Length: 109
Image (spheres, rainbow, N blue to C red):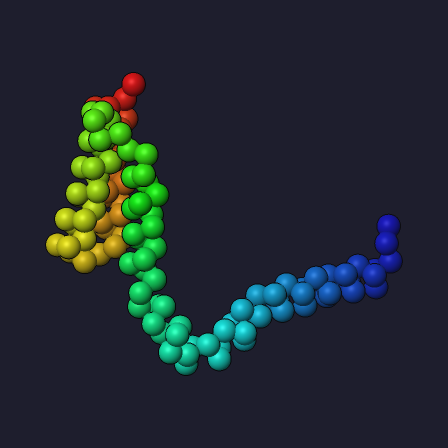
């Protein structure tokens, strides 16, 4: 069994390293909050990420197959609900639910 002082030192060092690693992002990013570039990216990135996800999810979709209907209907529900309610969480959850229900019931193999 290791010495008690050794165990206390190991726990203290582990706690200090954990605290430092958790605090580091906040202290390193504090000067960036006033940056014009960061403000520009924070306004534009959500739409850009959604476009990339849209292209990635629908890139291999066979439009001539009936299975393509489930993701297209889910996409329409997501976009329509978001334009109507302006709630990203609601529209994403509803679109995901519609896709899962359609893919697992109507278009299951």
